Amino acid sequence: MTAFDSFPLGQPAFVTHILDRAAHLRSDDAGLMTLEGHRDARAYVVYRDSLVVKQEAGGPRALLTIDEAHQFGANPGTIFLGLRDGAAVFGMGIAAAAAEKLLTRDDVAVTELRGMAMQGVVPPDQLSAIAMAKSMVSWHQRHGYCANCGTRTAMKEGGWKRDCPNCKAEHFPRTDPVVIMLVTSGDKCLLGRQKQFPAGMWSCLAGFVEAAETIEDAVRREIFEESGIRCTDVNYYMTQPWPYPSSLMIGCTARATNEDIVVDHAELEDARWFDRAEAALMLKREHPGGLAGPHPFAIAHHLVGRWLQTEPDLRA
Image (cartoon, rainbow, N blue to C red; front, side, top):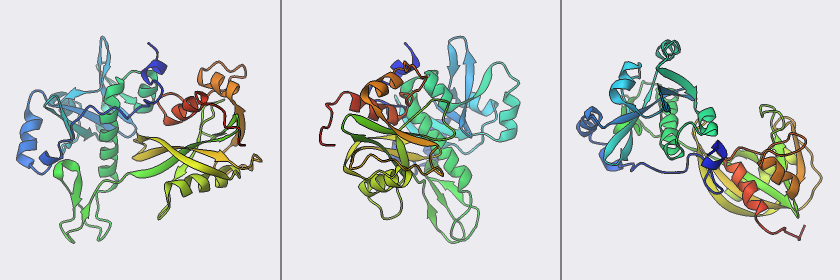
C-alpha cells in the first residue's frame, strides 16, 4: 500500500474521527487528572508544525504514554481531546529547548506532520485527533493573554477555554473558514500555482471567508480576485479540518461564465485551464511534462478526482 492508497476518493486526511470528544468531562478537573494518571491514557505532543514521535522497529509511534510525553519534556497543562475505547487522549505542547534536546536522540524524533501524513507514516485514522491536538496547542500558544484587557489568562474546561481573572472575559478556540473550489468550464478545470508549491504542482484556488460573507459569495469573490474568472452554480462538496494552524476547508465546485484568465500575481504564480485527460495524468503523477496535482491527503485532490468521474458540463 502506498501513501496514495491511504486516502481514497472522498476521504482526505484529518476527517476520520476516532475520538469521543466527551465534552461533558471537560469541567471535571479532578476527573481529568484521574484520567490522565491512568495507565491507558495517551497523548500527542506537538511542536510547531511537528509531532514528537517514538522511534520503534515498526516505525514511528505518534501516540505516546503520559510518562513518555513527560520524559520527553512536554509541557504541563494538558488538553483533553476525548476518549478512545474508554481511555483518555490528551494534547500537549513542548518548549523549543526541550524539543531541541530530542534531536540528538535515536529513540525519538520531532517530525513535520504534513510530511508524515503525505507519506502515510501516521495511520490515517489518527490524523483527525492529531489535527485537534495541533490546532488546540497552537491556539493556547497564541492566546495566552486576554484580548480585552491584556491580563494573562488561565486554561479551563480541559483546555477548551481560557478565562481572564481580571475582566472575567471568556476566550474559546477559533476555526477559520476557508473556501477551496474547483471551477470548471465545459470539459476544462481551473487550477493555480502558488510560489511555495513544489515544482510542477497545481491545485485548486482557495481563500478565507471574510466577515459577513456567505460561502457562495466567498467562492465567487476569491475566484474573480485571483484569476479574473466569473463563476456561478456554486455547490458544496465536503469539508476538511486543516490544522495550519486551525482552518476548516470548505470544498466547493462552481461553473465559469468566462475563460479569459487575469492572474493576481500577489496571490498566485500562475493559473490556467486543464482538460480532463491532462488533469487525470496529473493526479496519477504520470504527466509527460512532470506536472502534478494535489496530494490525496488534501481536499483539492478529491475535488479534482470527483470531477473526473462526472460527465462533462456542456453548457459552457
